[in-house]
Length: 258
Image 1: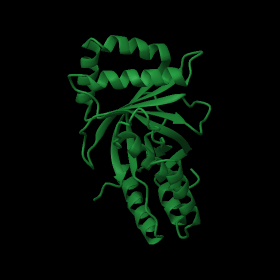
Image 2 (image 1 turned 60 degrees about the horizontal axis):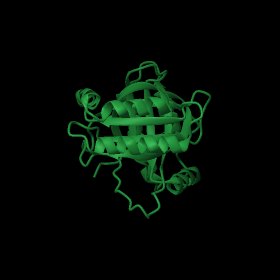
Image 3 (image 1 turned 120 degrees about the vertical axis):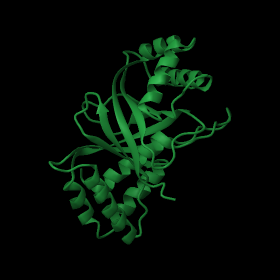
Image 4 (image 1 turned 180 degrees about the horizontal axis):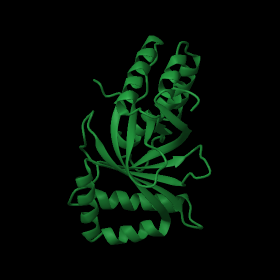
């Protein structure tokens, strides 16, 4: 991790990715620009935990305020289940590419932020920062409030051989249609992220399913599987993607105070 600024940029992206609300665009309107998700994958240093991370967060916000900067909205995901080599993910969310670039430039031009990096480095060791775009696939009208912890099923997916963006778009419309007409419990939101920067093990797409709780997720999965539309959607999904699933507990750590 080169700067803690990048780490916080990551969290803000996640915030938008998982909790932003969007309106349906008219068929003749251009779709909105995708949001930017900047992500850090981190492990706690020996003897450190979430309380230490939040303490570092407080210091970061104080220093940003002194520098006249506004920190991006941020979320932290803590690993619950799955084969992930990290303890937590920090996301910064940006409304679009221009907002991301402006935030990066402002932080680079500021002075007096060196100790922010040192403070975070004393708590976590991060593998680096990766940036991606994200779009909403489905969003429920109501969800958890600020400060609530949510349950996230994250799917790292690779496209099947010979398939491309048009097949992903068809699947997104299928998911949106089925969830929009579902009678039972549905997720707070479903988002799809596409890497801009990536490493050798990066997936082609990431599908984030945000639920109020693990129980709500279980009820949703059971209900959609028993519905008339669920099996066809499952077959469509399996025709497009191979995915690995991990489960996370997520909380907002920057933004939403007011």
